[in-house]
Amino acid sequence: MAIGNTLFPHFYTGFFQFGYVTNNIEQAIENLKKHYGIKNFLDAGMIPSNIKLADGSIANNELHLAFAYVGDQQVELIQPLKDESGFYANALKNNDANSDFEILLHHLGCRFYEIEQWHAFKQQLNPNEHSVAFENEGGAMHYLYTDERKMLGHFLEYMWLDQEGSALFDAIPQNP
Image (cartoon, helix red, strand yellow):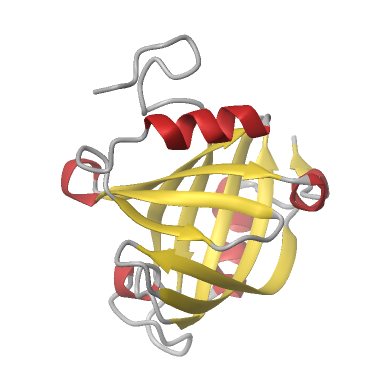
């Protein structure tokens, strides 16, 4: 593994986000409020997400997203509305909001705060050891997912946000 410097001692590093996929975001929010006391969420609504798949093709996704902070941990809820990639919807048994409710851990997220960190990470990433499932195609949030499902049962997400993306994260409410 090429990782081994002070910036990236290993690839399992700096996770602050738990990303859950659900077929009913409103019910997921209500369940987290009722059972875990996470009362304050930012419902970001539908966000288009055009991602580049490992084969170079582009998948157009529409995701309903909601976020909350609990201390320094972020909860991200994702309801796939249109998922050409299949990486979100296929995690669910049934992607119909009218079917039985589902919420599943989808990924852990790591955020780099400096663009240089993002570029260094991408340069050191060995896709033979950590295959890139998909990467975004521009926008305020630069991210990629490595497919760790065989080893860990979920994806790992790595991201860098520009000022616009950072403003969205800054607007996420804190839960005491």
